[in-house]
Length: 234
Image (tube, rainbow, N blue to C red):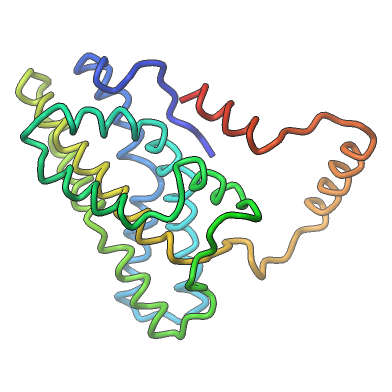
C-alpha cells in the first residue's frame, strides 16, 4: 500500500509542489485497472473473469487511492468552506456526510480488516446474482471520479500559471468529492478480496512464523498505533 507522502498541507503547496504531489495520484494503477474492467464488461465475460477485474479495481481504489486521499480530507473540506464558488461541492459533501455510517478512522479500520463494533455493510458482493454483480461493476467503473480525473490530467498538461493552478485546484477538489461519493456508495457493500483464495504454502509458513514470534513475545502493534502512524505520515 504505497502512500503518497507529503508534509505540506495541500493549500500551502506552490503550484509546482501541487503538481508533483498530484501526478502519482492521477497515475495510480486504479485507472488502468478500471479501463481493463470496462473492456471485460464490454466483452460480456464470465463471472469469474469479471470478478478478477473487479478485484483489481477494488483493491487499487480501497488500498491505494483512498488511503492517499483520506489524509487530506480535512484540508480539502476547509478549503471548500473558505470559498463561495465551491458551494455546489459543499452541498455534495453534506449529502455524503448525512449518509455516512463510519468515521474517517472507521473507514481506515475497515480497509485494514475492521473491528468488531463497526457497522456492518448490508450487501455481500459475493452473494449478488450475476446480473446484479454486473450492474454493480458497471456503476463502479462509471463513477464520476474517472471523468474528473481526466479533467485533472488535461489541466496538468497545460503550462503552469496562476490561472492554471486555480483551475487545477478546483478540478482536484471536484475529483476529491467524487472520491467521497464513491467511498460512501461502497460503504453498503461487504467485499473481501481474499475470500476463497488459496494461501500458498510459503505464505502459510510465514504466517505461522509470525504467530510464533508474537507468542514468544515479539513486538505487535494495536489498531490505534497503526492509525497514529498513518496520520503522522500523512
